[in-house]
Image 1: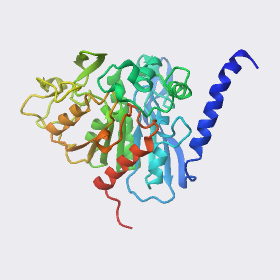
Image 2: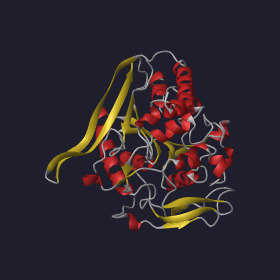
Image 3: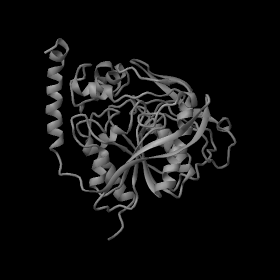
Image 4: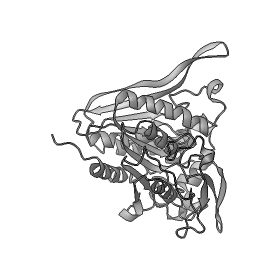
Length: 384
């Protein structure tokens, strides 16, 4: 055995054990059909070559016993792909399979320029790869780095958190190259997701993290077709970005990153605006509680997001995530603009300690159950 193989053998053995345990958790899925396709995009002439650009890869599963009329579209976050929803790193099932078992059809995308939706720098601009040390600071060992006030509460991480831990290696390996320009990402993914909704019909859309900025423009463009919005720690906070710098100040407020409040691409406001610069924002004089940022909101009188106000909307936040200091700002902004989001803080339900990658941690199925119960209330399944 080589030196490298000898060094990797314990990790391989651990992974094999984890996967064997995870795989034994549930009965086989019963599907009517599953497959994949591409949606959106167009042909373009670039550098003397004909290229397909703007397209999005979509994987789908339809259960044999479908009990809910509206499928769920799963949109992953930054530096990630759709595999965040198709399995956990201990070999267990992901949220996609969970909801199939609840009777939903599911569509899992790779964002434009990510994963199986190939990156085309000639069309999208420069691409970047994240530093995997961010996995430790934000997900695996956030309680060690303590960059935000709630980080010390983190508990449900499946592994030990070190760089050579099998779970950390799986999470690091799942990182994917992405488009540098976040505004461009929002434009491209809005258009591709709208094309997906037009193809499959009325749907529920679930967005995690970065994808939160896509949720609102898609629903704004198709308010009759989007039957519910599930914002799982959606991109934020509104208007200005926040950096985490640790105690004692914790937060550093950045420049305007979401010129339309919760997105950087146009949204329909009433009274209307021709450009995001017409929106006027103010910051709270003081935070609403310990460990929370001072939110930005519209200056009164607030314009209304008329296309979103009748869509059932959920914002869900875990206890120890870096979103814990500011997801209430997203809720406040939406409410001020006439939307009626339900705000679920997992800690209020006795679910403690999760990080931002809550769909991958040890209690991920319990969190999926919370979302499913909310959907049962917001969109009751029709009688047979």
